[in-house]
Length: 122
Image: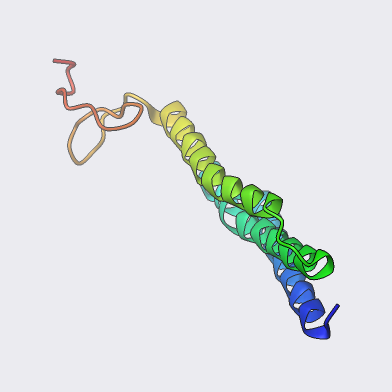
């Protein structure tokens, strides 16, 4: 394998490991759930993405062909991580204060949007 390809793979592995470490520390050290969500969804996703790109580059250099597996894993990861984070955040918001009147408008919080009905339920 060419030394430049080895350096690229090593750099991507180090970048991925750094982002995974930052994401894990964020998950462990941040004070509440809403802040804690950012560790796994932002930094860890970038870390896994860098590791998967390193794997694609390595196997393309060793085998001489392109593998679609890592690309599909990266695509599915980048599509599902934000959706799962949004669902967790929405569940946390609803569990901690669903149905309470919101100060600026007086409307009630519902699952996906604010309810257009008045605070008295009409």
